[in-house]
Length: 108
Ligand code: HEC
Image: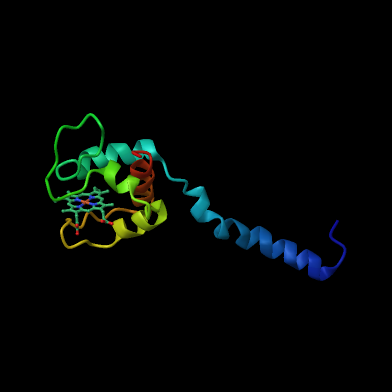
């Protein structure tokens, strides 16, 4: 077990700061929630699901985005937090952006 004071201190620090370090993981992305958000906020321009007939011609369908070799859900989540010139700023929370990215990833 913990023998030294330093070991005990180390253990205490981990107990206090450990959960903070793992906080982003606790915020696990939820693709189902992402779908709800996508249908509400993104479907006017993007084809967000295979049963959707049409979006705007300029915006790539989510399945096309997910199919890109460079696709990375983490990058998409970050992209969604920044205002994008051709896309309205939607003021998404980090959790919402992550959920949307997870949903897009699932459209492959
Ligand atoms: C007003 C129309 C509009 C809405 C609403 C919209 N988008 Fe877009 N989006 C676009 C257009 C247009 C592009 C292509 C931009 C470009 O080519 O520069 C794009 C591009 C993207 C891309 C690809 C960026 C890349 O790497 O090429 C992602 C991901 C994306 N949108 C996600 C979303 C999500 C998620 C939502 C809903 C929260 C959303 N968009 C809502 C118009 C829209």
